[in-house]
Image (tube, rainbow, N blue to C red):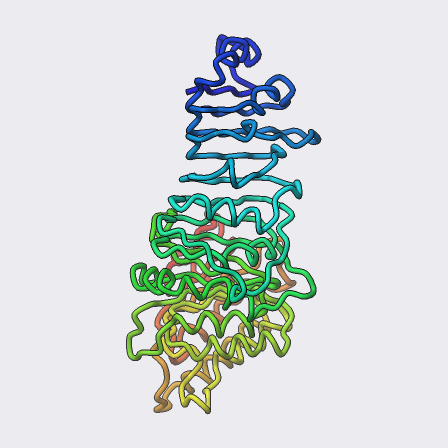
Length: 433
């Protein structure tokens, strides 16, 4: 195996190593090169590579002419990784691959048609990875006008930090019946982006993977962000299969109903549980519609939100509502609620009002959802208002109907908090109350 790295500390400098190895280019089998310039090896890169099986090239070069890799002949090639280098792509050369990885490819020498032709010529492909790439993939017509590429051995798909048009030009035309993991994270779309059409065309044929992963994992994480949604279902700290993760710039009224299709409505105990985080400041008809759809699901196990105005008031109001159509409370199986950005004043009052609407006043006989754990996260010291949280505020929340336990996460203790519970000098987090 040949390894050449521009900043190597080996006894032989890269040029000296290349002087020894390059004359035997036709015998190279496995190679990994990371170079600041391709001038020294360009002649060899454009020569046939009859025995080459693994090729990994990282070239951090701002400008260079596209390279016609391997002179049109690399019959043994199975694993190729290209990072940064501008290359001429040809499905007659790049065929029979097991792994195809493109990273930071910014030239427009590869179209969607050409890319699909390359993967079509590699029916044994096991890994497909495109990262941080702005290739000139053109939009393709709906999949009904094109025969999808069958990749029965493809196990893993990674499309990370790519434009949404690239995803929409690849995934709808790939069928990977044995795929057990994918990661998709996209840039913001153009004005003509149709979220509903994108979701159905791009992910519906991964239905079995999504459902089997949800059943296997038992829980997933959903993030509703200002300009996108992110849904992850994988092992903590691991991407071990089966798993999926995608972040797409979609509005909530489009994304949440699509996600809801995969989550069961069975009660009293859903097979899959959802941990939800909401980080939005502005509230409008689209976000409200998405949140109301989410509120109907019995799968939501935890709900985490930043208290941002004006959205904070509206979301807390939703949490306390009774859905008249469904005759059920919002988030009927919610076990934990986490409110971040808490300080003295309005958040506490809004929180009390939500609890009263959701569970009723103390002493009332109200059939409501099960009690939930409460976590309050205070504002950092530098963002404190004139008055900080009072011990009485915590008492009102902890003793409210429907609160199973209360935990405070803060850099400081509430005014009036006994030192045995919270020590300001040591700045310890409060024990559950």
